[in-house]
Amino acid sequence: MAALADQIKRWGAELGFQAVGIAGVDLSAAEGRLAEWLAMGWHGDMNYMARHAGLRARPADLVPGTLRVISCRMDYLADAPGSVAEELADASRAQVARYARGRDYHRVMRGRLQRLCDRIEAAYGPFGYRVFADSAPVMEVELATRAGIGWRGKHTLLLDREGSWFFLGEIYCDLELEADAPAADHCGTCQKCIDICPTQAITAPYRLDARRCISYLTIEHQGAIPAELRPLIGNRVYGCDDCQLVCPWNRFASISKEKDFQVRNSLDRASLVELFTWTEEEFDERLRGSPIRRIGYERWLRNLAVGLGNAPTSPDIVISLKSKANHPSELVREHVHWALQRHGVAA
Image 1 (spheres, rainbow, N blue to C red):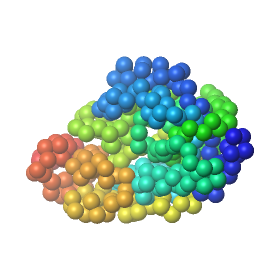
Image 2 (image 1 turned 90 degrees about the vertical axis):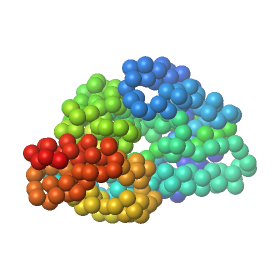
Image 3 (image 1 turned 180 degrees about the vertical axis):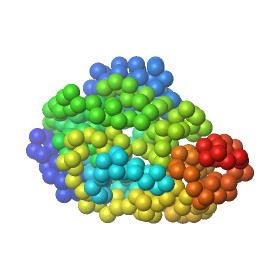
């Protein structure tokens, strides 16, 4: 089993994973922390977090027969980022989280994990497994930490000495592979990620109130964005990278060679006005194969309306907002009217 574990890591590297580790399945210590977080209601609208909490903390309940979890990391950084100030300097530009600027990582990661399983099966013979890429109740960060891939940063994301610009995927399997030693924490006294958070969603080290997190508000949250948080969102229309941009470890991040993660639709430089003019058909077509498409056109417009409300006043912005002041969606209308009021214009 030790030899097979080493071979799996070599195959993983050949398939484009930057790290592969193996974890045991006893997550009982983490289960209590998850229960506490859910009890505080910090998961917001993400009811699936509570609904499947038991499965999340007990891999063998999710996939009977699971003895080990193979955790895999894949880098996605397409270009070298600037500072938070540099990234947000142009308030008229739509800010899209870097992970979502290319092809949907779920598909890329699942396909690569399956190829790794095929290699294992070809060498070892049939075995029981399931692959996951942010697609089931899986404690990704906890498992990756136990697999030695990295440590949990104070922003709750996984970190290693090359930063945090990467995706995680897992293989639940019935192979009793030799497990790796957990990774040690290397954040020290640094709390730059806590200090930079625009909405103060990171309430303390390792404690995130998702209800205030911009990534949650622009992606997971289905209703109206709380009015008091809208000005703090700025021009971030899908996700937020601030806590990663400020992390000192990300100075050592490598640029990904994965073509699928290269920027599409000019989402690294598109203006708010440009994206707001897309019809629903254009949204569906342009973002086919993108993770952004899953929030739907209505929430896309909601997010852009908030960004336009926070942008410097200009004739183009006012005209663009007015064009959707009578949109059929009440959700869109509410955010457009708020944005127009920010520019001193009646809806």
